[in-house]
Length: 297
Ligand code: PEP
Ligand code: MN
Image (cartoon, rainbow, N blue to C red):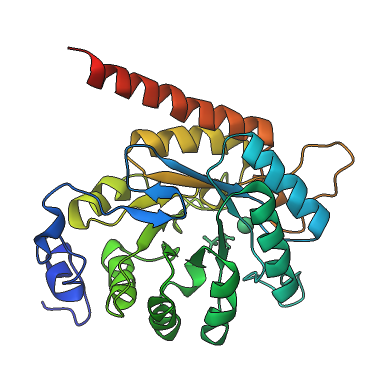
């Protein structure tokens, strides 16, 4: 029986001829495209760590967390000025004011910044402030938005739709590449699965990392914060992602000062700067081991 619309890995050369290794031989069978954001290189030997608050809530909170993640060894800053919230009655982000704050935090720390854009009409605005444009899970298949970010000439962080298969995800990336922008970093952020909500927010699909690497040359990172929704799980999920070959992590961090205000979104998954430092040390130690092995006769 033939099912209309069913997609399989074998269809990838048709779905994404620009990005499939089978149809675009530029990176061979195993090479990764380097996506450069300022001095940060995705797809190189060293995994990249992006960290910051879920949302930009105010100037003080953002500057504090930005300085803390810089101190913990992060390479890049994250933070949402436009937030996709389940309820329209919840905090939606500070918008343009949030972008101004992000720019200040980025200049203050020297960290390039990635932030989400949700509206095709705002791609120009967000691109003026951000070093990298984030497409959120809920917008992975917003095709007009993908086309706009493809035209923006800025690197793009494309999160996997929470119910998207690999083919749909790479098909979404192809929309961006079709506009001439190949500076795309993929991000696995947890998928909907049967036990979701019982002990974790989503299910971290580690298996997709080697699968992505086999099918395309784009770098792939992991978001252990949204994938688990539980701060105590973030460190382990981060290590696991690195062991599975992820090219980096994007992690939500909040202040651990006792008198700090509780984050307005995703408080339960935020880790402290100290835990972030442990994750960075883990990557450093692994890197040392790798370099030692390369140097050994
Ligand atoms: C985020 O990273 O801020 C976010 C909303 O993540 P996702 O789109 O993966 O839910
Ligand atoms: Mn969040």
